[in-house]
Structures are given as structure tokens and as C-alpha cells.
Length: 601
Image (cartoon, rainbow, N blue to C red; front, side, top):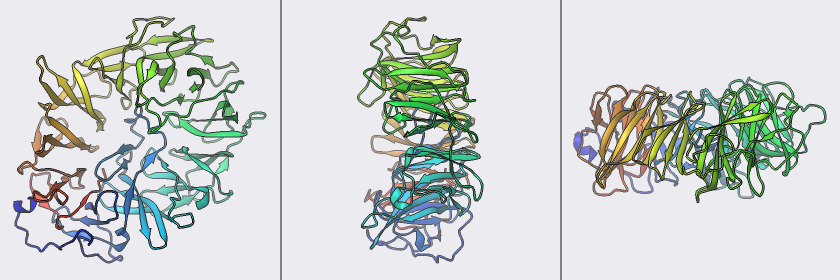
């Protein structure tokens, strides 16, 4: 047991399954500068939050406002596997806390919660900063006859600086856009000047200086300054739509938004707009445009994209077969169907992975079919450029053997993962059938990074580099697992940070902007906690006998690793501790009980 490592000179507060594990502090007590946040309670059930001092383990903050909370699922607008490592987007993490958003620019973590009561419930968002100290960022009463219905839409939008998020309320809760500051108590009601609007949870964006929400009656844009209100985006004469799909994407530089609207679901157009000015329609012929392609509904997305500068735009059309279109937004020519039979065989019916990683080049995947989970299957990845009125193509992956149009061969790639590397637009592709890990370089082609790569456990961006845990096949029937570090451009030799048997799983990985990484090693039942500093060449393991651990791990403000260790005699109970940067272990002075950490990193 963890408590056997040190003789505790304190008496732990006893607890039953239904009682709190701490004595509540005064609501008037000031928040500590840093600490380790712990949720006391079973996952998905009602519990309380306390903050412990990482140096002494003592409970230093436990106001009553942290009691009677149930953590809920959270998601954000724009989430796709292709863009999961884009540095100005949050990363959705599922672990012992259910789900949380790790905010960009080391902005902390965002959680959603519900607080049930005798006369309804309240709902809100909890922000845990990198200091480890939590703060309720927003809380509103539930709606409906019983007051138990969530007043917020399912997804939020997050600023690229990680300092704020945008949430829309349901019409029953006021139909508003609320910009919430993560660094202060400020909440800005951006639509106080308009009647309640039915906003879409796939149509929210919060940029550095402006934001937008798509409702059933318009695009509502606002400046990110105190007192600014949202106003409808105007349209050029003769181009105003009567139908709004609720779908919205932005360019990688975030200067241009693309939304779809028109005269009905089968007669839509792309509309482009920026921080100021009117929206401009692309094309003269409406069509049934696909949704944006966000997770969790769509594994093959995105299906809409706009290039930096707003000059090129691409989308997928629904129909008997799905087709891809590319258009120049600044000229009066009709969009080009770049998946037409003149270029691709008729049996290639699925389009996805649409993105502009270069303002002049579209990258897309075209495949024979989708797998059971909705990913592209039997696919090649292409670069497409507009040359005069005709597109030109580069087959980057060449699995079908065709280097030039028409592309009539059968693609063979079955991608388990396709992820854009941060800052470069190079793609990391894992072929689940060939067991190969490839780098795809736009404008050049694909080259093999790792062969005999049977499986990828996770992909994690740490301090600009990318870490992945790979199951590798050896020359015999044995397999082994390696933790590998890639640079952003994928051109440098990869570094093996850890290597072990295939029986040794790498779980619950986490990292910091400073390049610290920690994870759990599992060999059947025994587990160890391990950590490393990128560039050090040294991997440490927690100096205690093998045990079992409750995810997640959490880096503390002082550079330690907080962990939850399952009790030897009752694995439903967790004991918490901090593995300090110098190697010492400080137990948190809480009685064993159900619970998990609330990481701020």
C-alpha cells in the first residue's frame, strides 16, 4: 500500500462509501496558488473536489461549492482525427475523469459537470489551470419541467490561445452565445441584443479577435472585446440564403470561416467570411453538401475545408456517390468536380480527409469504401492544385500504381490513423493491413518510417514533437512495443524512448509543454508508473513495488507526477500521491476511497 512507504504523522479522516473523505473548508478561504485536484467519488457519479498541497499532501482547499458534482462528457467543435495535433486546437482526452479538453497554449483543462438538486439541477464548466487549482467557469440552471435538462449545446469552441471558450445555450435557456474567460470570472453574453436563437453545436468558432455562431436564421459574428455584441453577417446582393445547415469550419490561420447555406438541404453553397465584411457565396449551382465531418459522428472527416487567405475552398457532395469539389472563391467560375470519372474510376465512391495544409494545395483521400467504423478503406491520398480551369493531381501514396490520371487502379491502403503533424502539414499514416507507418509529404509523396508496425496505441504531441506507442513484429512470432519520438517534419531519424515486450502495455500517457512525459506500464496485472524528459535519454520508474493505478496521471505545478494507486486489498479504493521531481513520494492525506485526479495539463 502507498501509506506503507511513509509513516504518516497525521490521522486520515475516515470515510464510508457515501460520506465525503475530507472536512469542508470555508467558502471564504482563498484559493491556493497551486495544488493537486482530486475528485472524490466514483466515475460518472456525484462526488466532491478537494485540492491538496503537493509538498505536504494536506488538504488546503475544499469549499462547499465543490460538492455534489457529477462530471459529464465534453467535446469541441472542429474535432477530427486528421487535425488532432493542430497546436491551436484542444485535445479531447478520455481517461478516469470521463473526458476533458486539454486546452491549447498550456491553457489548462476544461471539464463539464452537472450538480443535481432537490428541485432540478445546474450544469456548468470547470477549468483546472496548470497550477492544478480548479475554478467553476460557468454554471446555469437546468431547463424543462423538472429543471433537469442541459441548458448548453453539446460542443464548445475554444480560442487558439486557450484562454477562453464559447458555448451556446438552448432556446429554452435563452438561445445565447456566451464567451467564457478561463483566466478571470468574466462571462460575455454576445447575443443579449437579439431574440433567442437555435444555434448549432457544429457551428461555433472562437478566434483570437472574433467569434461566430451559426443559427437557423443567420451567421452571428462578434468581436472579442468587452461589451461587443453579435450581429448577423451581411450578404452580397442576391446571395442571401433562406436555409442554414449549421456547419462551419475555419482556415488553419483562422482568418476565414466557411459555412454552408442556401435554399434547402439539397441546394446549398459554401459561404466565406472573415472578421469583417459581407459573406460571399461560392458558385451558382446549389447541391447537397456534406456536413463538416467532425468526430464522433464522422471518422473520415473533415469534408469541408477553406485555405488560408480564403482563395480556395473544397467540399464533399452527398448523393448516389459522394463527390469532391474544388473552387477558387475569387473568380466567377463554377466549382470543379475533382473526383469526376475523367480523373478517377467510378468505383472510388468515398471522399474524406479534406484539408489545406498549403494555401495552394488541397490534400484529400479517395477510397473504394468505408469500414464498419466509418473510416476510409482502400484509399490513396492525393494533392490537388488548380491550374487554369483544370485540376492537376499528385498521387502521394501510389498504392494503386497510377502516377497520372486517370487513376483506374485499386488502392490498397487501409488506414487505421491519418494525422497531420503540427506546423508542417506532413501526414502520419498507419496502414492496418500492410503494418507500415508512413510519412506523407505534400507535393512529394510518401515514405516508410517504420515497417512491421502492427498497431498504434496512442499519438501524443509533446513540446512540438510527436510520440506514439507502436506494437512491432520481429522476425519470429514475438512482438514488442516501443515508445517512439518523431520530429514535426518527419525527416529526422526517430528516437526510441522505451522498448519492451508486447505484453507490456503503455497506458494513460501525458506530457507537458516543457517536454516531460509520463505513462503507466502494464504487464498483465502488475503496473508501474514511468516518466522521462525528452532529450535526456533516461526513463525512470516509480520506486515502489508493482501495483495497479487508476488513470489519469497528472503533472503538478512543481514538476512532479501525481498518481492514484489502487488499494492492495480493495481495488475499488484509491490512494493518491505525488512522485516529486527529485524522486521522493508524498502521499496525499486522504483516506482511501473512490476517485481520480483532475489534471490541469
